Amino acid sequence: MANYQGCISVSPSHFTWHKLCYLRLFMCIPFHRSPSDALESRGTTRLQLRFQNKLLPTCFTNTTIQSVDNTAITLVLFDASYNTIVSYGPLSSTKIVIVPLDDDFSADDHENWSESDFDSKVVYARDGKRPLLTGDLILNLKEGVAELNDVVFTDNSSWRRSRKFRLGAKAQNVTAGVRIREARSEGFVVKDQRGESYKKHYPPSLGDEVWRLEKIAKVGVLHMRLKSHKIYTLNDFLQVYTTNESWLCTLLGGPSNVWKTIVKHAKTCILDDKVYLYRCVADGTGILFNSIFEVVGATFNGLSHLSMNELDEFQKSMVEALKQQVYKDLDGMIPTDLSSVATPVLAANLDSDCLRTASLGMQDANIPFPHQGT
Image (cartoon, rainbow, N blue to C red; front, side, top):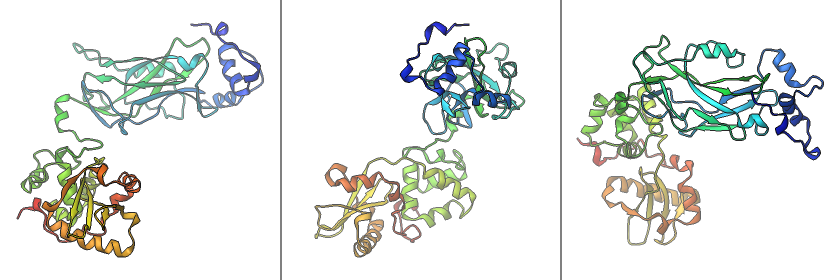
């Protein structure tokens, strides 16, 4: 084990009780009882490795493991007695090894487990198989934080009794007498890569085929029903949802938990910055729509464009009437360069979530739409 006594110098101007608590770990400086003593006497290890974000509940072999929020999987060294990340001192750059664990790990996250308990849950490859986990499995914390960028399972989890794996993280070469509790993720299923072509996307993209949405199976009944009405992509789906929600709901079997799940997943889609302009008459009146045909702005002189939040009640009623005409004649929509129409206020509102609800109550209108067919 490394000896840190010769690596630490403390300036009097920076000497604080908080730092002294860390120095006690590294240099064995005796002093009176600290909050961590009471914490550890209750059976909770003070220093803990933790995964900061949740992993997807399903991943695929030979594919990088991802988090639910689609950000880098982050690992931290946490001081439970001070509720903070250990961002300085020798332990803040500890070497970490990533290992595969069985999901059958009964200890509660708020409880302690021993190093041997953790090691007993490490899973090894089946006979004749490649190493179960590959990629960047050795990390060095930097200021108490590390990111997992390339971790891959080579085998599915169906052969385990729990039918799931976890990721684990364990500190290496820690100074004698210091215990750092290992990290473990939530359990997740690993499927063979051949199933990836059927997996859902979180979040989905506008260009995704519509079966990437939850509850719509590839080449299933709902998929083929949508396809028969020329609704191929998520963009198609959301355009129809915006212009005629009730018709789309009926097409998919009417109000139900399935319908709610499909719509909820579809609405997590991140929109692009594409806009369309529809001019109704020679006086310059027109409406701006986003890529899924939600109203995001209007012009009444052909020059300045206002966001929906800037319109008064009379202007909103005009937009409502014009929008009904637009939904009957979508061919009149003209793709428009955002920079040519976006004032600072409008540009800000185009990125605002509040515009997702600015459909002015037209979603239940019985308006024909080209994709609906007959």
